[in-house]
Image (cartoon, rainbow over all chains, first blue to last red; front, side, top):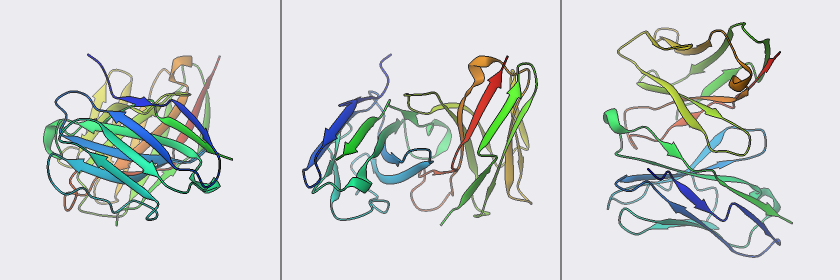
Length: 116
Length: 114
């Protein structure tokens, strides 16, 4: 079946502009996660959605970052007034549920963001 | 919060040799430890995971061991092949709060040479 998809695959923007990144999770997956991966580094948790519960935004680095998800479908990560330090790969993952035996996170290919 | 350290950052082995990657974690309550493989230009893929109620798990050439007392876990790849070349990440998940919020290590770049 189809995996997690993300768009765009690459995004180049100018400092100060807003960007929107999209994630389509695997159908039926109730949990969705966003991570940031700077060049040569590990994955940094940003935000987590589980069904209709309030999202866990504890990883968002500043108020310029926000994310939305409608129900159990598409999610968008928005970065306002982008800065050069926002340049990274933004990864989305989804899982059947949070916790338990069905919590394996499946990752999309990521969006490579470059802020000039 | 949880802190995961991973070593080495780079590892080069000859084809057919074994590779071992080690991780330590700080939160003794963590109970789920997955390993991900990330190939160039792709998202991470789960290759094996272990829960705190077992000490070792194997899947063909890959095995993971967990020492809860020492709070460390390791990935073992035997009979390495060129296609094993990738970046490997360990992760840990505490059971409280956001149940599946993984904390990742910084990654190990494994190169398998012919």
